Amino acid sequence: MTAEDRLGVSNQVSRFVLPICTTINMNGCAAFILVTSLFLMQNGGMPLPWTTMILWLFISVISAVGNAGVPMGCYFLTLSLMSGINAPIGIMGIILPIYTIIDMVETAENVWSDSCVCAMVDKDLKDQ
Image 1: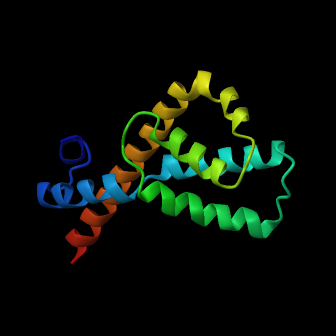
Image 2: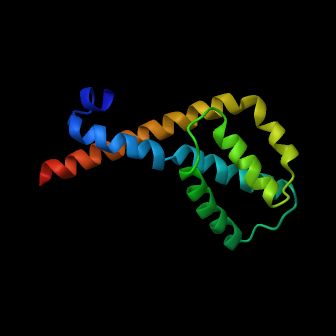
Image 3: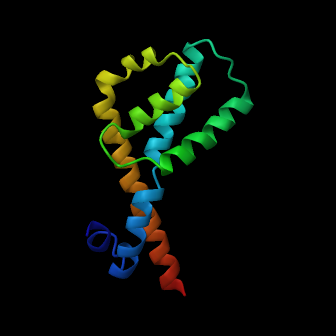
């Protein structure tokens, strides 16, 4: 594994932490859901007070945890969340042509953050 070879993480830690992080730690997806949702609501003429933004921050983090790691998973999750509040989902057509690139950036962010968590856990366990 790359975490074991390049980061020097023990195999016991990496084989326990990385599968959990892969399921729970979906930072790229949460960021996409939040930014896209606020973009759609703003362009749809919906009011965006601070309370709504903070609420959507929590919604995006919680929904990203339950998202499947499939191509375009975040796109369709955001689409379903936005259609649930009657936001203008036609605007998401602007994002669709470049979503493949966005999805690659999301995946890179998720892998990087998983590796960071793995390295931190390994460091904490070595200190004990």
